[in-house]
Amino acid sequence: MKHNTVLNFLTLIAGLGASAPVLATGFVTLPATGFTAPGGTSAYTACNVTGEFGTDPNGSIPPTSAANNTCAIFRSNNTVPPLPGYVREALVTRPLILKQALTFNNSITVGSVIDEVWRKDTRCIYAARIRLNNVDYDRRTPGQQHFEINDFLRGGFRKRGPVSIAYHFSKSQPAADEVLYRAGLTYTSVVAEPGDPVQPLLDIAPISLNWVTFTTDVNYLDPDGSSVRDSSWFFVHSACTAAKPVELAGALRFRQLGQEDQPPVEISVPGFAPANADTRR
Image 1 (spheres, one colour):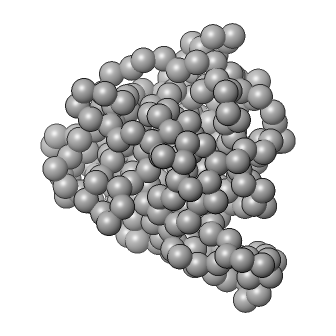
Image 2 (cartoon, rainbow, N blue to C red; image 1 turned 60 degrees about the vertical axis):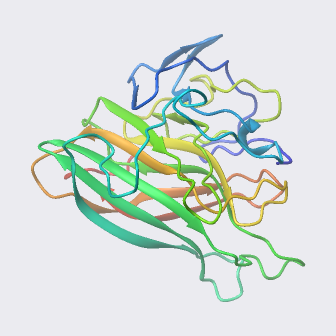
Image 3 (cartoon, helix red, strand yellow; image 1 turned 90 degrees about the vertical axis):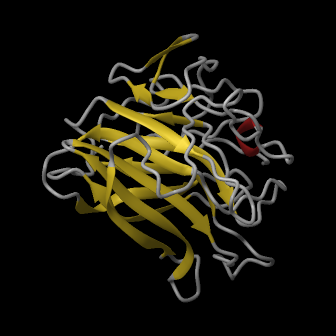
């Protein structure tokens, strides 16, 4: 991708933090105090940073059992639970509808997200997978502008920690998924400029105990040549209650950060969350 400066949906920011740690395959806990990183502390952990956050036109390298597998889990298919003993309790496909003055009809469906919940007693796994459409979301601009998702956020985890994350990469689609580059217990989105460290420090991306942010690079037709329309499956593992999961307005957020001169855009849709959750930052 051609990277411009940063979009942080709380403030405009510039610069990143430190290098990525090496962690084990599987779910990775996001500590409430953050991760030790060169130069300080970060809310983010690195997962699969091959492909340089989408700047490499050759794309990222898929995780395997032997390499590039931090944060990755491996399932034979999407009906297998992310962890043993969990049962799928809810599944909904939600449209991603862009509603803003960029569009002539003020309503364009740029893609969809599968939203799932898996349960084992009072532990839940909230899962999501994004697919983007071949659609021009800004028809007043010459050419075809495809919506891009650089960050996916899921909210509602305050008082439900410790929270852990993972992703599942699938090769079974017509084109393979995009990987998860990093994830953090934060509401703040940060664009990675070429050569920047992977982990933004807390003065740039402060911790939010209510939000998990997944950094990826999904676009049906990416101007940088690394076009991937499907995300991996993104998982958040947390405490829940015996109550059924609730559908919380604004719990899922999809951010285009302007990495190829696109306007910064956020799409917000309902999503499953623990009972009594909220979307405060």
